[in-house]
Length: 101
Image (cartoon, one colour):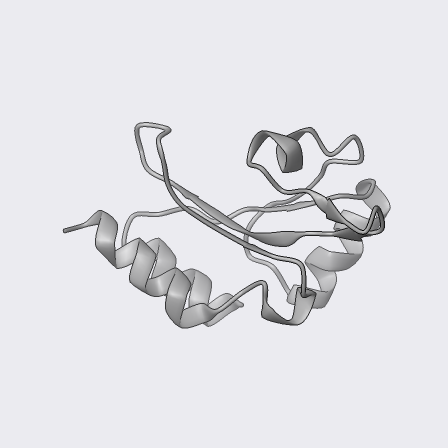
C-alpha cells in the first residue's frame, strides 16, 4: 500500500481508509497495511451508508473505495460484495489520473 499511496499522493490526492468496526480494528488494519495514511473507524456505518455501501444477505458488508475531488465532489465509487475484488490498484490509479484530465 505504501507504493500505491506514494503514486496517489504524487497526483495531489490523499488516501484514507474507513473500516466498519471500532478503533481497535482500525489500528489492526493500519498495522497490517503498514498504512502511511489515516485508518478511521465507522462502527455505526454512517460513511458506508452515505456512499451507498450495503450489506448483502444481511451479513456481508460491501467494501470498495470512493474518489472525492478537492471540491468534495464524488468522482468515482467502486463497490464489491466480494472482499477479494473490492480494490483494484490499476482502477484506483486510472481514476486518480482522470482527475488531472
